[in-house]
Picture (cartoon, rainbow, N blue to C red):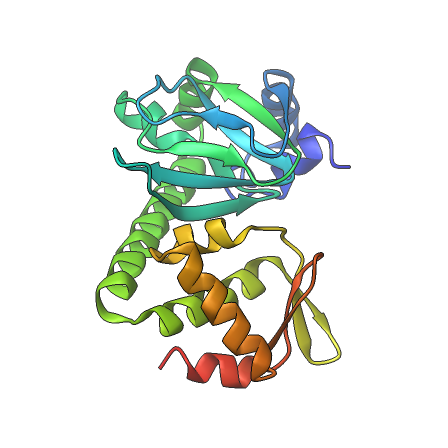
Length: 227
């Protein structure tokens, strides 16, 4: 398992800084272990730290007043999150929940800003990351408005395959363990709709679903459903 200095070296936000400063920065970070389903922070709470994922995965969830939830992103090992509330001093804009048992490192607000002030390249990387996340949100909104549920679901499976997949003899195994409710939350649909799509894709030989993973058997045919 990577220790803080080695982990930071693999993250674009921290790659440009000298090793000596990297060690100093790592010493300022504290560890946090969270269980599957545990809430890292809630929408509306005060943002006090940047989080870096050492292992595991964290989903970003937008809750509604009627109990429905939209999953806007899932971050994995090496990703960072929580920077938005630090930058604008506003409350957290979404919930962050562990998809699986995870370990994170925390960088407190004061140390985070000191780091940015002394590292121009880190600021550029941070702005690029924020821009990319805005683009992803725009894409999610566009898909919800203009794609039907089968197309949205197929596209999301392919995205999960790109991020969490493992190639195996031409097939793509999504090892991330997520529920049908989570999948529904990612595409703005009901769990019943996702169950129906999973069943149809399995019957057509496009995917295979086990208790351990979703396996994309025919990525080409799955991609056709996004068009």
